[in-house]
Image (cartoon, rainbow, N blue to C red; front, side, top):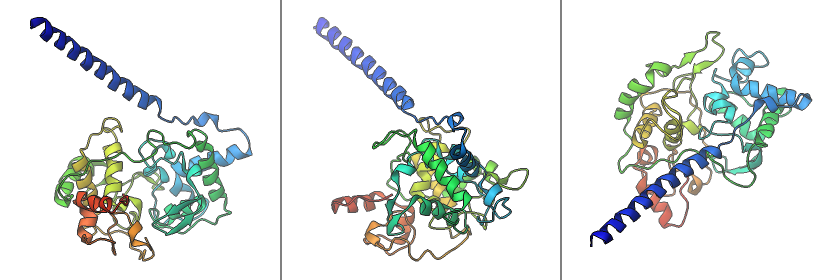
Length: 325
């Protein structure tokens, strides 16, 4: 009997040990799979010149094409692309752009049509940047597209890779709380983004070290960051910037949702308003956390905006349709 127990314990210990190393190895494999873009490899030729300017535009968008832009005035605010697409679109789980050149042209449910990559670039210029579209043949558009083509060479073809999408979150059974989110914002976010969400400008006032989260200089409703789930996924992987890593988040899933709900509470925070009445022309394709109806279900606008999301997801799955978020 003792021998049997001893043998069982030995097997259990071996299994636990093997399981530990398997999980550790799996984490190491995930880190090994991370895409690392080596900017020193940008070619020293005319195409490389466009790529380098595209990289500059990603990092210092407002300096070149902001309200006081050196090379044009296209943005309506002083945010930079890299404020959301961190590390110039190469950071994992931070709205990565490494595969963008492969993924476009692409059907976009929000617009209800196929967009080219240039149209998608202008989509960002117009919504988060609250600006006007770049001419398709402009130097800046050519530079953006050249940059996106160049970083695309680092992406594996025809397959997903670690960090290509947002970090998944588990949905709680309750709705996101703007009250709890406001309390968390004071603790974790206010030191950089300000008590009024105004952000922190660079010393030259040509761009932001920490972008505004609402107000006249914030992003528009209808922007990806204006959706609770989308922002919560981004927050979990990236914020606070000096505490979080994608593989070791600082905020819990619930905290991420609560902070996103507070930031995007249009009842207490003003932001540039445009009437994107043409968004999601086919309601059955609408993202479940998009805060404006109509919807192809009976859930309220408030529930679509704040949750709880589990009943909405279950409803669409029961109809054999994939919920979008």
